[in-house]
Length: 202
Image 1: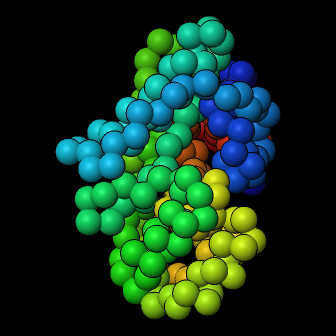
Image 2: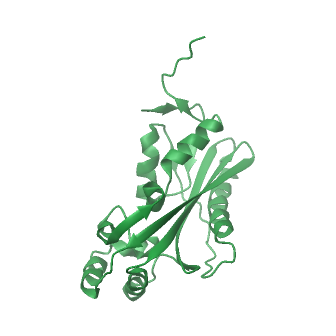
């Protein structure tokens, strides 16, 4: 299933995972880095507002430069006990994060912002992820792969971190970084994309 569009679309991310997911729509798009410096908050008072603001900042930063184009920004955070677990700054922090999340259910929140025609449309996808109990041996082996270094919460559900996951309640692709089904629905509602080859019989 492919979609079509007559709008130029930019993904405000160089993430290979987000690019791979957006490609599922079959529409052309560019990827650009917003250059936004994220202000990290370990314990945000309004966590949905916090992650949404980050997505909006990314989309708007590019939309100001690329006038007339549709810009999609996204941000994903991992949260447990109200605390945000960002990309780890080193292997020691990655180990601490994974030890903390071991055997527990944490929250993954992905916010998406769509800047189009001077307006910004946002939505949030929330997923509960439960880990098995993890011993230090498997944590250390995973860290040695280097995979945790650029992942919020120090794991990638689509890579080696999949072996940690006992249960997931919500959108798997939102945990990867882009809730593509919900995004396609919103883009259709905004008349930015439509199903390719659809015919209307009157």
